[in-house]
Length: 399
Image 1 (cartoon, rainbow, N blue to C red):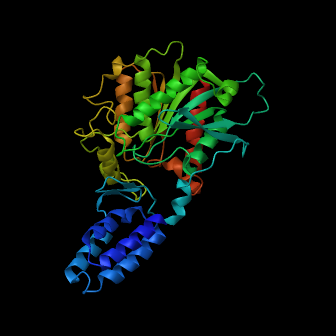
Image 2: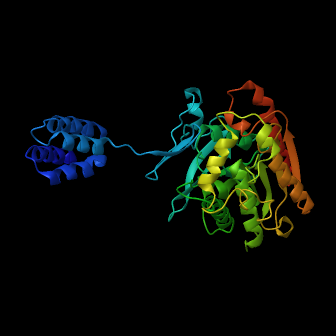
Image 3: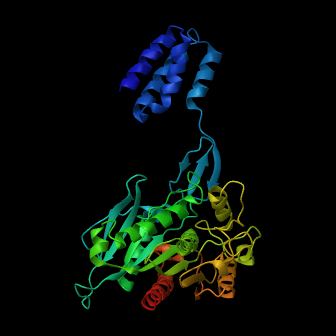
């Protein structure tokens, strides 16, 4: 309200032919609430429209300044828009029937459909958070039963998605129940505001936090009471799969004491290279996910001056550390039969085998990239999702 009063006073001064208040009004405009700005704009228009006060040219220049809009620099399908002032709009602009998938699900510490959730700040300095999914005890569980932990990194091309979106709540609640595991899903920083390796840093910091809980340096009741922190797995989908590889590689070279990783699960990882693969050229595209969209996301997230051959996006390439020199845990790679990244995902799998790494492959026929995030919208993906979940369950049981 104070800003509105100031603007009104400034308008009176404008009517007296004084220029300085005119500039003050322009500078204060972005700080006004929408309703007050609209009111002030109407009053200003009334004032400046009078040629006897400011003159026609001056009126037009002032109004042009007031309504000047920021310019769109890059649009990534329906997912996000980047403007010339550096701001990013991540409001979903696609079909409204998909909007619910992107809605945040509030945490609930009571069990709903067999799962409880809570959000935890793991670093008070940075404010980094995780969401914990705790499955309800099964009849065969005892008070002494401790559950494996899946440390999850979400996808979104390093640029969008949140750990609390319904699409992730749906699939990771399902995995927590089916595998009888605790899922710890990391809220990741996003590009272009935070380019790589920021997301890798977030992933590794969350792993260090788990280690601090395991070593009684930190306390988290759900983990202390229910988690087997000797059985920690990394899991990530799409670009989150890239984070799995990078965090596992860092962990292999770090001094984590007795804290070890039991495995890594990469679900349709976002591995690419600068030269187009055959699957990128030939597999079906959609507005939900396509090659042009992927290119734009990588251009916004890869370090400035690098391209898609960067080690984070192409860990099997010549610029990446040799795979046979990495100390990696057993890895499971999921690929989709019609995924645009199928060929480069297979290149990663073959390179891992050649490097004598412990790696398994599970192919799910007939599915494209990120099929599991459509929740229960399409009954045709029920069987592929069941295959994905059962593959995760089996991998966790055997490692």
